Length: 75
Image (tube, rainbow, N blue to C red; front, side):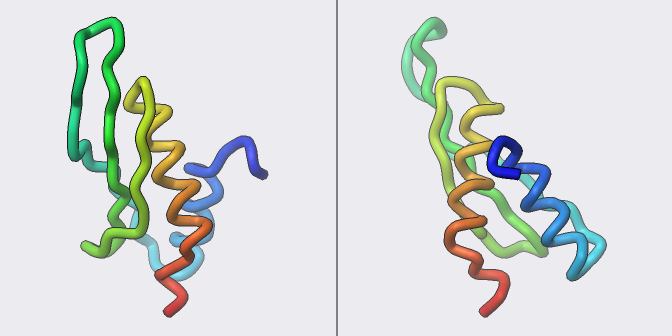
């Protein structure tokens, strides 16, 4: 489901190990009405991807999408 990268990432990772991905804010920049967030997604302590967005939710979605494209947990 391309409309829900966070859900898809969680399903794929939990199929391997019963641990949910964790989203951490790396940066919050700009005035309140134009904030930009940078978020990384971690799983089992390993960074899987990063994303930016105008809200925490958008940044988390972008980070999940980045992780799904990189698939570094399969290495």
